[in-house]
Image 1 (cartoon, rainbow, N blue to C red):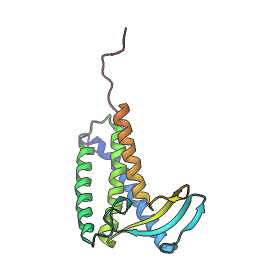
Image 2 (image 1 turned 90 degrees about the vertical axis):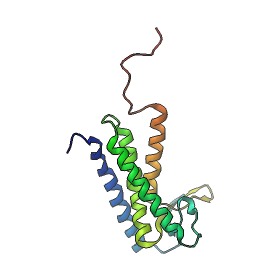
Image 3 (image 1 turned 180 degrees about the horizontal axis):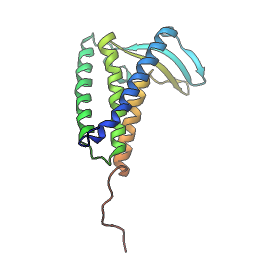
Length: 169
């Protein structure tokens, strides 16, 4: 592994997310009925559905052009994330892991969108009597990665400490 690109080693996380996402989507499609909830636990269903839009079915009924818009956005964002990871200082591990999760999720959903024209969703949770929109492993990775990135930016995790102490005497 090149010492000039140490953070690229974290891309294995992206590959793992993509593999898990695609495998679970294939299982869901082969085992679950379309648009029929299969209750697994209270507040948790398997629910196979196809999303032609983005998060929360944004633009799902836009007529088809949104497939290519979201494809282009995913490719651009993925390219930016790879470059960002490549340029990260070696001590910013949490940022690299966060970005790798987001990248894996983005590519997992991009694969669906390119090959099928929609994203395969199959997990549904309930908030009391209200269903949360169905989602998948890729969506979960994007959410967790984004949450980690936001939290780390607020608390400074992964940032090198300054050598000078700024504590009061």
